[in-house]
Every structure is written in C-alpha cells, then in structure tokens.
Length: 309
Image 1 (cartoon, helix red, strand yellow):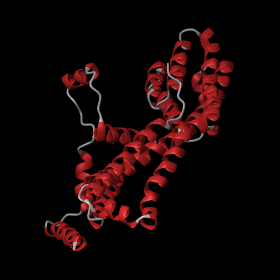
Image 2: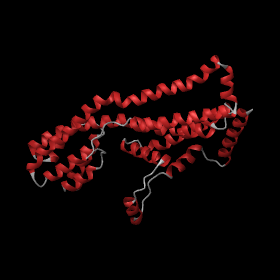
Image 3: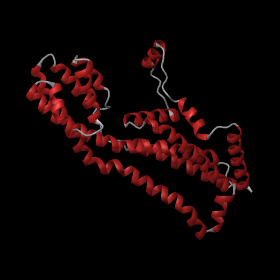
Image 4: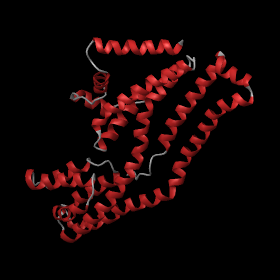
C-alpha cells in the first residue's frame, strides 16, 4: 500500500513538471545557481574577510565540492552532481517507505543525497596526489633551467613540452601573458601564484619573485622544491595509516548492516521486533544516522599529507 502511495506521489510530481512545461534538470540547475558565488560589494568582502564565523554543515560541503570541481576543471559537472543527489534522495525516500519506517525517511533521503558530494570530496585526495607529483617534476626541471639561464620565461619555455596537465595549462597561460599581453614578470607571477592550490607552489612563486630583485637568491628554490619530494615520501609511508579508518568503517558498516538479515535466521522474534515495532524502527534510524556521520568523518580524515607554511 505504501509503495502504491509513493508511486502515485512520483506520478504527481512528473505530471506537475509536464503541466508547467519544465524539467527536473532545469529546476536543479536553478537550485545550483543559489550556491554560485555572486559578485559582492566592498562592504560584503570586508565583512567576509574579517568574520571569524566558518561555514558548517551542508552549505560547507556544497562550497567544498564546487571548489574541488573548479580546481579540477570540472565545474560544469556540479549540476549533474545535484541531479544525481536529487535522484538518490528519491531513492532514499522510496526505500524507507518500502520498509514502512517513517523514522528512516529523513535519514536515508538526506544521507543518500549527500553521497555524490562525499564521493567528490573523497576522490579529491587522489587528484591532489597526482597534482603534487606533477608539480614536483615541473618545478624541479624549471628550477634547474632557471638556475642555469637566470630567466624564468626561458626556463618555462624550455620545459613546457615536458609538463603534463593540469600544471602544463597554468604555465602555458603564463608564457602567453608574458609574451603577448604584459611583459611585467612580477605581475604575471603574482597572477600565476593562486592558480594552483599548493602551499609549496605559492612559496616557490614567492621565491622566484624575490629572485627578480636578487639573482643570488635562486639557490633557495631547490630546497623549496625538495619539500614536494618529502611530502611524497611521507605520504607513501603513511598511506596505510590514512586508509586504515576507511577499512575499519567498511568492516563495521558491513557487520552492522549484515546483522539485520542474520538476525532473521537466528531469532525471528528479535528480527520482527527490530523491523516492525516502533522502538525497533527508531533503532534502525539511529544506526543509519551513525553510519552516515561516520562516513563523513572518515572522508574528512582521509585527506592526503600537505605541507603548511
């Protein structure tokens, strides 16, 4: 009966979209625009810069997802992620209704809807490792050429064909700007600085800017690049420890969820109490909340090793 009511509700939603001549994708696209960073006034920028209040919860997760997609040049996929999130929300409601557990409806709908955003945040760690590896190679060869030629433009130009994306695109834009738009190297380096989210890269750019005033400072660039090598070595040594919380979470989640069907074969009275009584349904909802909260915590703990200035 509940499944029939849910199907009728989904049919009502579908008919409403047809009646107003729009589509769920357009609605989700409009909702996604609410999270776009709009142009702010000077007063708002000063307030945001001086405010110590940090974003929390779903709003923070949305902003982090957008930042990750922007850094990986996949910002146009945010609408698709929102669409998948909405579809999973409906699936969560459908599963809870099929189980005839009203306590699970908000838990599964919100938890399932957040899964795509958690996935993006989790896979960002792998992308960050690849970026650091490519940065290590690029900065190493550019620094070697710069020490020899004492010209950052020449150093980048000599090695641009040996650098892979996404670092290649950043340095290619730098060469285009210095050769065709503005020959002021300091301004171009300042613009280059924040195109890659890496504390070591920012420090290296600061070092190159200082070298424009004093060429004797070029010897300080090599120790900066070596920090990326140290990060790679430490990350390789700690990989097991970083992924240990994920293994423990998967194990405990399987044991927790797997005990429910196992209980059916061991003691049907316990199973019926858990599935068909109010207290049992509430316990299932609490277990689902714990699983989703634990998943969010595990993803937060599994970030790769980063160097902080």
